[in-house]
Amino acid sequence: MQTVLHYFLHLVFPLGIALVFFNNEWKNAYLLLLLTMLVDLDHLLASPIFDADRCSINFHPLHSYYAMVFYVGLLFLRKPFRILGIGLLLHMFTDLVDCLLTYQNCKDCLATSPLSSVFQVIFIW
Image (cartoon, rainbow, N blue to C red; front, side, top):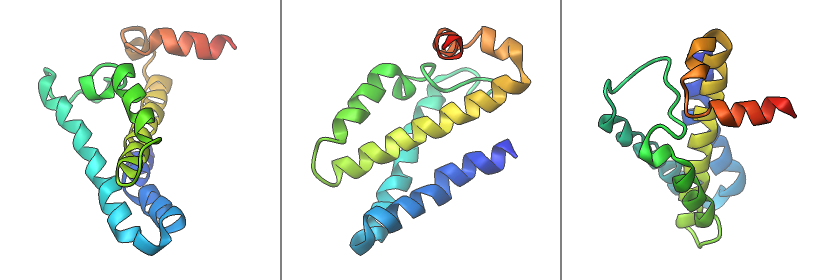
């Protein structure tokens, strides 16, 4: 189920965003939203490149909190930068959901994650 949800949020949900919010130019908007998945190229810098129990958020450079601040800044610019900002933030949200689902099944993974302090703050509230 986690994999289905992950790819739904990466591939199908952006199509819905493109159709609803960019009706006249939905094809271009959808293409830009899909192109934001190139942000995952920063996974190539990690060793191992893929680890099913690793959370991308604040582990990879383009998934860092600093990068996310930049992505929020893109929302205040004109198209196509605004669309790219939406896509990048949607990508970060998708990876966050994936992290939450992973940590639900792997408590030890949470303890060693860069997100553990953020989750502690969230779940204390």
